[in-house]
Image (cartoon, rainbow, N blue to C red; front, side, top):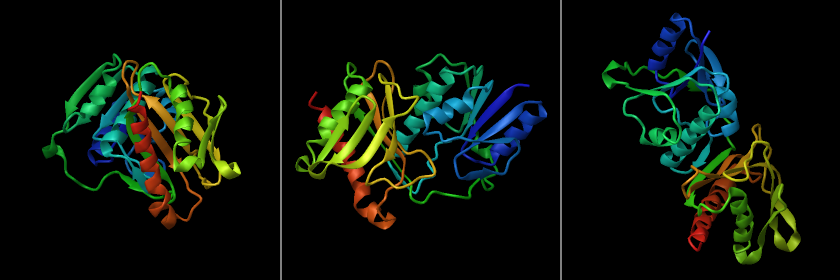
Length: 292
């Protein structure tokens, strides 16, 4: 029995689509984000589309994939980064994961095909069919997905930047430590030993954030560091992580992202003090690369 994974934005059209696939004898899995339930038929498959390892595991044994609408959702209380940037990361995750799988065909059903999806998928030679989801065929009933739980203290921050093609992402991570030493009058230091990266409060040698390479971290094109502790880090139900990724083999376009981060500070204080600093530091890091 062929397996189909349906990635959806939760519109009620998905219910009819899934029902038709089940009637044809397919084994259907419907993607939902962490903390979300689905009310349509088919099996539920919880996937964090921002987590490449999660997406790779989800598509590994699938035969076909259908993308309905725009399945780009964050489900965190605080997301720093434009919808454009978030969508770019999600579609790049899907493209990379599908390229490493045995998926035979992809069906994209959108009212207007996302140029970000096309751009990401055209990096690989996927067999894809694009169909138009006409608005007049939709009944605009409530969606099939409903958020039932939420980690109210989680943060996602995604920014874009350009890093010269000749520099690996591990090299960029090492230079990130050097960049941190230029901030706050050298109060902050970043130390990388090849496996662990620690952000320190220099005068007292206090670790603010401690990170370690994830198993699926790729030193050349995609560095993913699991956040393991530090003075600024709170406990989280999900693995918080930091990543620097190149968005293709022959492009300077890169992303720097912080995912599922839970601060130790009280939430109200974090939002007005530390959260803006995440964005400012990312913007300064972007300017740092303009010197190269």
